[in-house]
Image (spheres, rainbow, N blue to C red):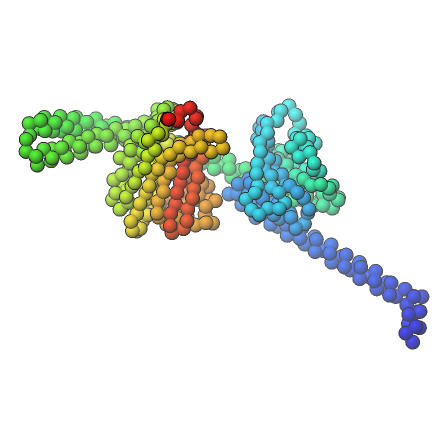
Length: 425
């Protein structure tokens, strides 16, 4: 009987048809799974947040593509007038490995995929390149998305990569618009700050004029009394009066200096003296908040070229933020430390503000310099302080580093570049 069934199957091809059917069905299922994965990738690309940095965007796109396309490097190229910025993420990414490079290009050259591939061939000669032009809604070229690998891509993968570029292009255009708006907001915030400082300057000038005359009389008469007084107790009290008068005069002078608009010019700054002036301005606010301030200075600190008023503004913002983080904290302490740092062949003056306050949540660390981001309660902060501070330090070609552990400490370090020959021996 078995032999008869076997003979019938051979003659009719029933068994063969079943095999073909299952092969086709398996292929169809795999194809549907592949399409579903691709649709999932495109859906994930719609979740790119406008707050992301370009390195984060590149890494995010690469992570989404890894399950569906094989590549070695993913390159996001952004066009800005006469420069190209390349953000490169390798396929094997343990996290935080995205890197970037910048190249100038001739404005007379037509921006095209072919021209980009020629530039990439110089940097990565051993790779095949698949590039797609990114365009804005107004049909303006804003950049490219490129996969580098050791093999060429089949037609289906090429079509899918173009879809990826379309979705990524929308997200990238949104980020560019957001950055443009934020830049305008920063400028507006600085203009508002300038207007406030101008108003403070006018008021301070009037107050200084009214107070300087009586202060001069107080200081002069106190000095005369000190010369004639032989009683130790009276002499000590008069000395206190004199010192308080001198301090009052210095505070008025610091307020005038801080609010004066012509201070935006770059000049030679004694950083240690700047710290003393800032502490005299806001020291009372810190004291009544129950905050102790410790200052540690490097005696070999060289002078710095910069805008005194702007750096004062950054330091005041960091100190007030530290004070806010120390609310209801026992043994509240702010440490201000100056030093010289050598890093990657460059010399920096570092100004560190360390507090033992509430710290910053790990998930918020990447957002604290974004405009409008704040962890403070409503009406207690705009979220522009650190954003403007970062802009000021970057205009000095410096950096701001931050370290924090929730409920333990926060430390901001301002790094301002100096030349090696300026360092005191």
